[in-house]
Amino acid sequence: RYCLKGPNNPFEVDFYAMTRGGGLRATRIDRQSVNCIVVDSEPQDTHERMMVAAHVAINSAGNTVLARDTTLLPNIHGLAHLVCLVFAPTVEMRTDELKRQYTGALCGLGFNPNTGMSLFPDHDIELVFDTLITQEDLDHVNTVRLAINITVGSDDIISEWGKQAVKKIQRKA
Image (tube, rainbow, N blue to C red; front, side, top):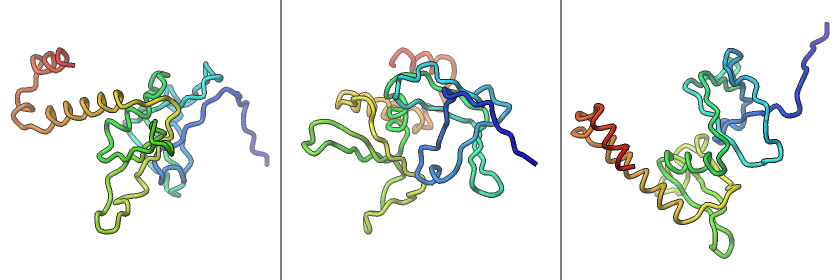
C-alpha cells in the first residue's frame, strides 16, 4: 500500500494556533469549510493574517485542533495583533532595549501576584509585531476596550439593547 498526497500548491497557506498550548498541536480546517484550502494571493507580503472559527475541537488523540465555521479576516497589516490586544483580559507590552517602540506583547488571563507566574500559560499568546504599533494605536485599543466594558458590563444598557441602542453605539463609534 502507498499513501498518496497532493497535489500541493506552494502558495497554499498553513494555519496554526496562536496560543502556546495550541502551538503544540497541528491545526486543520474542516474539509467542508470554504476556507479548507487558502491560496496566498500575495506571497510577497509576510505580515501575519488571522482566521477565526466559531467552533474549535480537538481530535480524540489530542494532537490536532480542528476549526469549523471559519472566517479569514482581511489582509490588514497588524489586524491580528490589534484583535488580540482588544480582547485579551491582560496584556503585557514588550519594547526594544531603549524603550522607543513596541516590539510585541504577551496576552493572557493574567498572573498570580504571589508567584509572578501566568495563571494559564497554555492559553497565553506571545505576539511579535510585524507592523509598527504606536502609543496612539494602544490608546485606540483602550478606547475600544472601555466601550465594550461599558456596553456589555451594564445590565441597564443590556436591557435597552435593540435597534435604537445599536444605532446609538454605531454613531458614537
